[in-house]
Image (tube, rainbow, N blue to C red; front, side, top):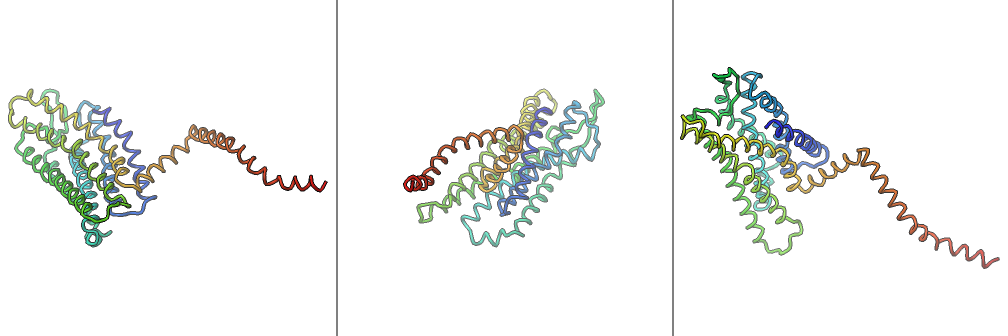
Amino acid sequence: MPSFFLAVMILGLPLNLLSLSVFFHRLRWTRSTVFLLNLTLADTSWLLALPYLINYHLDQLYWKLGQPLCMAVRMFYHNYFYLSIFFVTCVSVDRYLAIVHPLRSLVLLGRRQTGLLCAAVWAASLILSAPVVGMSWIQTCPGSNRTVCPLYMLLSETGESLPYSLFCSTVGFLFPLLSISYCGLRSVRELSRRPCCRDPLGKKRRLRRVLSAALVFFALFYLPYHLIRNAAIVMRAVYPHSPASWRRADVAFALEMCFCSLITCVNPLFSCFIGRQFGKEFQGTIAVLFSRWPCTQVASMTSKRTRMTGRGRPRMSAVAPACAPGTLAVKITR
């Protein structure tokens, strides 16, 4: 797990910092841009907190950073998934309003309303994750006298963790999934009703992109995460005195934690996929960065020279006819 988390941090942090640079310096902010910006901010903040987990796993699950930091790291780890889910849902709802209720959307989601909605999403996700603080107490292993900072879903007592996990799965996952499905189906139905056969602005194509990307995100990352998390807690509730029966669910959840950390690397690609202007600016920024590398500069200079030599001969032959009449006049006078 620490090697996987380290690889995710090395890959994801430059991608998200580059995305933030594109958002702040090269884009005109729209509603979708603001939602994608907040999604990138959530990714970046989680990646900056990842070294604490890497250090914890490298120390063989020995927590040395104190109780407050244990609470903060565990709460923010739980909070990040719902921030990501909520902002992906906001992007889908924004496209739905722009297509089905274009005039009303200008009033419902102006600049001020969009900013307030993003602040409300951050506050709601923090409130939803606040109970994790009460379940993230440092414990001491009786055999080795080692201090650990456990995840709430891996606690042996399930009286609080199971109802809380089911509540988060319903409010933070199931309702957004139903909202995305409803918005996508209503938007597709509205576009199919319109009399024009052509789609010069590509609204149908962009809508399919948003809907398919959101559903793929839910199917690959969020659905397995919630299923395996609840399964790990249910196994403890069903077999409270048999820790050996928990092992498979715990291993599956550990693997799912590694896989879900890839969201921070995939979200910039998600923004490129559904944001046409962001994708162009992001690719252009990467091209500029690569062009500044020494090896890339040598290759670009070589390619320019080959293009110049290839074009040199046609230019000389094109200039020759312009001098031909003067030469012919001199010969005639002589």
